[in-house]
Image (tube, rainbow, N blue to C red):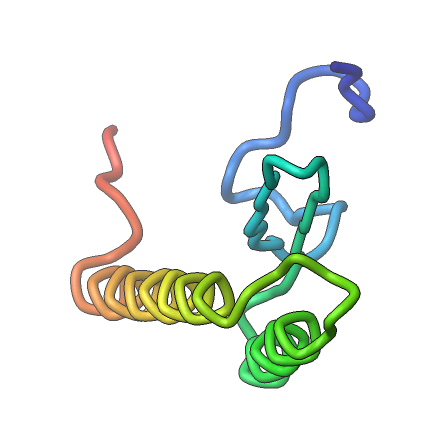
Length: 100
């Protein structure tokens, strides 16, 4: 893997030159089909993700099933709730311990 940054990897407090964090959900099926979904934490992105699951599940030319759409939807919701809980915790207690 190539590090595109000169020098050390930036620390968490530095401005991120690579943009927003991206979530990845991936599925590799026995038939060789691969489904990779990229989305961020915005409501608009998550809603578009759920719509895409429905489009793929309803497409008879794809092997993506409604069951898989439901499992991925549930996983995306869980990830979103987990991040919201982490944000609440960070807001309440701070993002980390500062050592002097």
